[in-house]
Image (cartoon, rainbow, N blue to C red; front, side, top):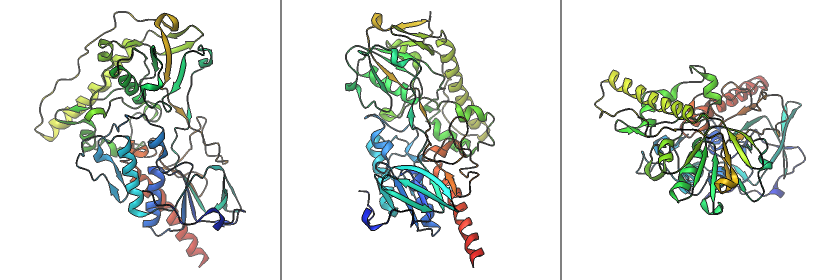
Length: 431
């Protein structure tokens, strides 16, 4: 069980004079990792403020059958790593929560749960972190809340007739939430593809509107593709070294699944099993979705990504002289003969829509000018232009793993060492 701090609200004055050296906002893996490094470097005077419970997103914002899409061996946090007997497997939802709880128990970070941060400001050399229970004054703030804050809904979604249930992927838990009838899943990133597959496996009639996400092999030439790519050094590549930074920062993640031990996701195979595929959703009115005729183009692009990964693994195996079993590249199992331009709700018996088209960041509680036009903070490896303000756990802050278990140790160490170095400089000056 997660160990709580012993103090209560009445133990601390909340008039702006409550001082702590470092405030960490967010109690997921990024915030916990920062706390571990602060303790490791002797900065005991810090506090994690968590709006809900530690690991809330894993507990409450994932569907019941959710599993990781990266192998368990990549679950590596500072001072702690996966210790089970299935390193090539994929932890399911409750196991991920247990992993985080084990991490918390291993070093007892100072956590306040149920504390909502409403504003972060800076004046007179201090940050003021205002919450639902009062205000703290501090020297440094680490924002580790991720970026999946506001679920995206498309323009005109409100025109869909009220008898058709609409649900966003973060609200979806299982198929019991979906009423009888046919269901549309919009979006083919990891969430959309996995939810569509679950509904298909449970015998539901599914319509799927495609996005631009690429796909990846699960197993290839005797090993998980993620394991190959890590061995090849791909996950050490920094954003500065990436050949296509815009795609890395703004593109969707590759779709595949860790369900039932892990497997590919093949939308062409979905079509053979009865899923109706549609192109990109362009417009909505009270009777229909209007879609592009780009199903084939999107499938071809996803398969090119899949086979590109296979080729990179082939090249690595050949160059390293590794004895690995041969395996052919992917060949399409289905091609659309014609492509629809619309999906009519009544004609198709549509009773529900699952939106799986992502999230917007929402950092409006930070009242400081560090954000770009898309609402993301401008940082250099998590360090902002405002001294003392840092971010962790966002995509590609340094490497592919920055928003994942496998990369947060390096990122959090870098940020915390900046804090420790600044504190040492100030101490030397004051001495």
